[in-house]
Image (cartoon, rainbow, N blue to C red; front, side, top):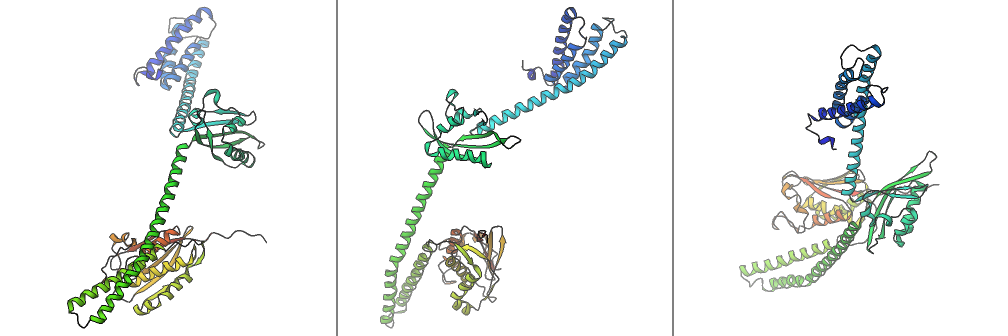
Length: 486
């Protein structure tokens, strides 16, 4: 009977207590004939325990309190009377009341513990099923493998097909993975290493599956391994997804390489016709300049200027496509020296714009030095290009440590950038001003972003329009030198 479904929540304790008392009365009446020497309240004590176990403390207390007068009236001398019992019977009644309360609390606690254990097992079963996991238990001493609920789907086997010993389990592992799995188990047993292994296995239907096993070793007081418990899962779908992602990544990498090669070839091939247009337009201006009317002369100037701008765009496109194509080993790079090398490259522009540049001591980073020089050169050049006409240009460079990375900042007091354009400025050929306002092709920051991301870092800008800009980027610190003994 589902006692939890009996009656309503309010009436259930009374109904269970009544049923328990009725059973106790019937039992006590029977034993009154067969075993008259049986203590009169023994069956009622069992009724209190039953009521408390299935109905809770309330039902147990009700059964105890209701059984006391019934037992007194029916089974204590003088019977069928509420006359004052003799001292011995009075003691029995008092003991019953105390024992009934104690048994009630004990039975209710046992029931609560059992329900909690049942609910925990149910939650664990549901969680394992939701995660596609199964539990296994290996008795190392007796070499007995026990597979928990849910492992049929993980192993692809049921009943007698399931391996019961470690050797039988190894036979199910793909031959190419068998030694690796056995080595992982031995390392867990001998060296207390984590047991976490993935391997291939063939199911009875002939299909090849990937499986994972994780476990922990239980040892006795002497440290000897006696048991190993863990979980397993069928990870075939995950492995297929990983393989598909790797293939897509490789294909995307090939497409990007082909696209960069095309951009490089196209830009390189465009240089010659652009150079011809520029040269011949200048020749026409020299030979026919005095004979051309102002309108035709303006047309030639537009042709020549457009050819020069197009040539600059093509050169910058070449710079972008080749910005990080060098396959070089990363090494410690002194950013202070790299920043000063960038300043040397920009000396003419610095003198022309009268820019004050302050380089604070910078750290070493794990990078490719020519890329870091190019990065500083682009950011400092960008700061001078977008200087404010109302104050002398200033550029400051400093660094801050953040965990395993360095955050390097390049700040200026220029015209600033509206927050709406903080992301856009890092795009290729993305400009915020016309060519007649500020020269450039809009590719310097795109190259800077590509260099930083190639080194596993991030770059961003903090700025408000009219109040300068601060470009920050992250680079990894060099790994610690290996320890050497002398």
